[in-house]
Image 1 (cartoon, rainbow, N blue to C red):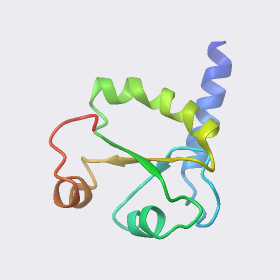
Image 2 (cartoon, rainbow, N blue to C red):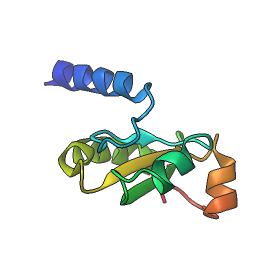
Image 3 (cartoon, one colour):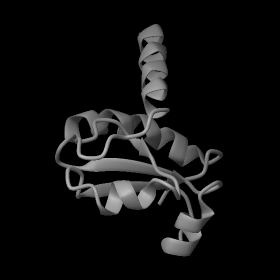
Length: 105
């Protein structure tokens, strides 16, 4: 069971390193950056409803929530896209656009 979980996690991480295709329903949690946010969240007609997870890598609750969102993303493809934003890196989105003050948000 542990080896299956590790393999699944490795495959998921490998899939997240590629850009999310615009126009295709997302079945994984999509990492969002300043460069990709607008094109994916605001203009992609195939993914119009989003749940955004604002997080910090050091946040224990954020870490605990990740596998739950990973699992949910595959079941919600075509209905709801899930995006994650690392607020330790993407301060322009987290503070500037959404005024995030705590994690997870």
